[in-house]
Image (cartoon, rainbow, N blue to C red; front, top):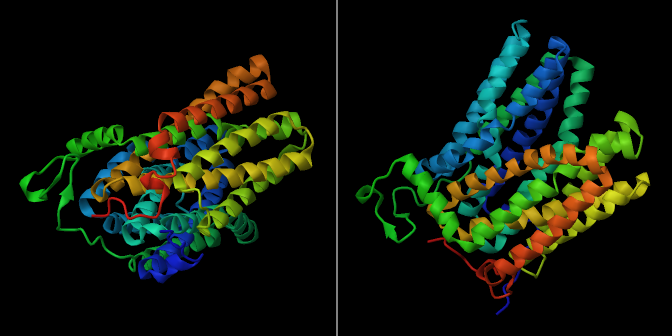
Length: 430
């Protein structure tokens, strides 16, 4: 029997999502505004590119400990962890705003506070998705994940522009007061997110359900158990391999090498770089909107593999294009394919994971982003030796090859139409 797909706005029929979505939207806008405002402040006040680079790196430092946040979420509940982190963002932003008001803010203080929040922010998307899996019906999950992704993509466009505009017109203090207000409102809205109905009930282990009180474990044991769990779950392992693949071979061409492309391929300077970035971000936003419609019939796992192939194919075309308008179209297409791939990928991992493991599984998913710096570091010497076009073509060709290899290796669990992750059946919700 064919299961009817819910409407575009169906996730908003769930009260918890009605609070979570605007809370995530406000937090995402605050993230983007804050990075630009404080990054500019550090550069201007210190006149040091090194400190600016350190500030940027601190935004991602917490991805190394994302699995530990997953452990915490599985232990204390995702809503509680969600509330704690949102309160931390608000507290840190208010502290920076007050220091700025009284003229006590320094680049060093910004780096310290950015380091504190940087340990948490990379795990924010993991907590958002885990909460959605906990509170939304399975047949609404992909649409809800797409709607959640819209909050991030819209912030990269509108939030960034708002941050720059307010900073340019009114200065640091009013701009950062606005950031603090957004964080505080996000914190208040987060209070409406539903609690985990499983708190105090049974926890699921790899082998079988057992009572938490009868088999206590340490966070270290929980973490090791999660690694073993992912290794033994072919659907999750295949999705993780694809996530690492796109980070090491697809993302570097856009998130790291666009300045090189703007300067050396299109010769359009900084203003042109902004156009390229906007093209990619616009495509990403459109991808989120389309996947939110939940109208794809191929199944989440098949969709993520098809989209990954399209993404790498677009990358291959982009490597050879020197005509700017066509390059902008391809960038928008790559951004579109990115979210058509990654949103279903998150859905596959969440649907395949038992409730007691969802936080840890999504935490380990965040480790895949370390493929990005690896791919960037490898691309530098390769471009110097073989040139950009040859390097980008090699990355894209390898991406196509390994995506096909993943589809073949886990064909029964991911590619088959009969695979459990390719339908709207309730999986692992008990």
